[in-house]
Length: 97
Image (cartoon, rainbow, N blue to C red; front, side, top):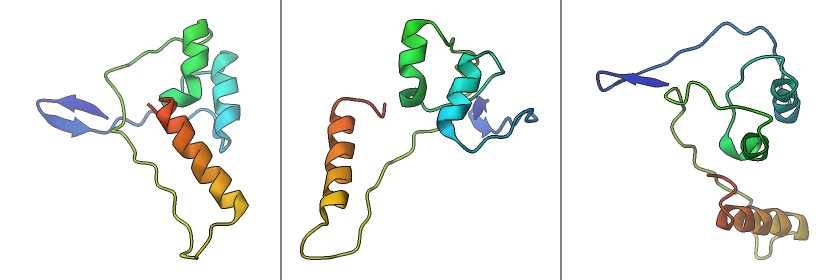
């Protein structure tokens, strides 16, 4: 989104590649196959290492909340507990900013 005269406008360039795997999209950008729009946590290390360069920084999406939802039970399964705990830990480390 870009903001012009206090109005947000959507800009959607025509795609040249279509992928559904986020890691593959980042890898493609790192290899020089084009421009992509990513969440900062996906590319932070590549930006810091100089493998990627931020462009069109005024064109960005509003933030997205992350929610963990599970069925109401007396006790969480160990798998769900691990994922929820890991999400909380990563959020506290600022990995989703």
